[in-house]
Figure (cartoon, rainbow, N blue to C red):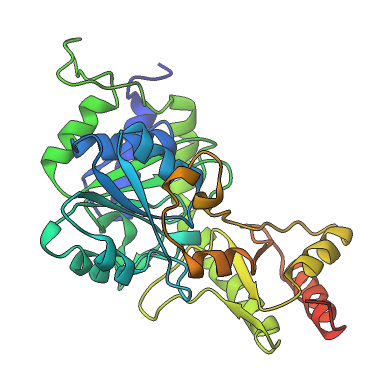
Length: 340
C-alpha cells in the first residue's frame, strides 16, 4: 500500500502526536494543503477577514485566498518577528473571521496575548507552524497552541519526510472535519459529507517521517547550539541584532537571521563571493504582485525588517568550524567599514 492511511502513515501520525503533545493531530500530504484544510475546517463565511502578518511565507496567504477569505495584513513585533498582538487588537472587528499567525523560523507567536487581543470577536486562531515542529511557548508544545496549527515536513525543515504535513486541532469536532476534508469528504463509504480534496500522505513520505520524528530532539538541540555560537561570535558587532526568543520559549531555529542596521546588501555579496549561501527571508507578502491589492495600510516594522534581514547558514549537520568561518567573515566584513 502506497497511500490511504497505511501502516507507516498510522505510525507517523502516532509518533508525531506523542511528540507534539496531543492526540488531535492528523497527517496530510503537505503543509500547504494542511493550511487550506485547517481554514476550511472552521467553515468560515466567504469574504470574512483573516488577520495575517505580511512577514510570512506565501502559503499562509494563499490558504486564506483559497478559502475565499480576505487577508488583512498586520505588522510584526520587531523583536520576535512574529504577529504583533497589538496589531490584532487594532484590526479585530465585526468582519474578522480568523486570525492566522506564523511561528517565524520556529519562534512561537505570543499565543496568550494574541488570544486576548481577539477580544469580543472570539475569532479562532490558526498557526502556520511550518517551522515549529519542536518549538515551545512557555513550556507548551507548538501543536497545542491556537485552534489549529499546521506543521511542515518538507525538505527544508528541521524534521523532514521529504514532503508532508501535520495538522493539530483543539477539539474533536475539528479533528473529525479534518479527517473528512483530507480524503475527498468521505471516510469509508465513498459518500462525501462535505467538499474535500485529497491530502493523504504517501507511505513513502510517512516511512521517512517515522524516522525523522525520532531525530527531532537531536536536531533541535544542535540548532540551539549553533544559534548560541552565532550569537556569542557576533553579539558584539555594533548595528547587528538578532531575533528575540523569550525566556520560557524554544525556537527550532529553522532559520537563523541577523538584522543589520547598515551594510546588509554588501555583506550578502561578500558572503556569496566566499561561497556562503544566505537568504533575505521572508519577502513581505504585501509587496508581492498577487497580494498587492490587499496592501491597504503601512507596515513599518515589516518593511524595516525586510530591508535589514539576512539568514545565515544553519542546518542539522553544520560543524562548529563552518559556523566559525561564517561568523568570522561577517565580523571581518563589518570591521572593514562597509558602506550603508
